[in-house]
Length: 165
Image (cartoon, rainbow, N blue to C red; front, side):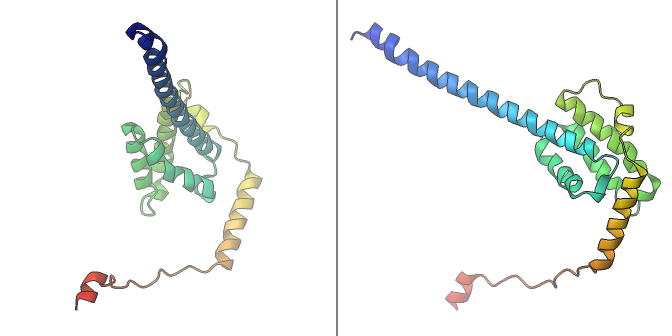
């Protein structure tokens, strides 16, 4: 084999395979991120009228920082939502306004460019379902007394220092 044949039959196919693998990996990763964002957005939309009663709601909220790590506006609105859900501020209802803005921004980041405030506010929440949730929460509160956190303990002594003595 001469130099031209080595380039033609060995080097070019190897370089092409490596470039193809890198592009496939990059594309797959991009699609996974898009899918994760859409799944999170869809889960939050599905529980938007029920809210914190569902453990999935809390799980999804806790995933926003990871899934939307590169979207500053979503992270800012999420922090604002958390601020307004504090017990001292919750009663004024501003958290609902921030939630709508958060879901709109998340929707835009997911490609739902036509989503509106009306789309988000008009979720289905039948009264009978609200009564079931309220009764469930009341029953669980009676069955499960509040849990006290364990007492704080002093940090363990460093083993190397303990052995040296």
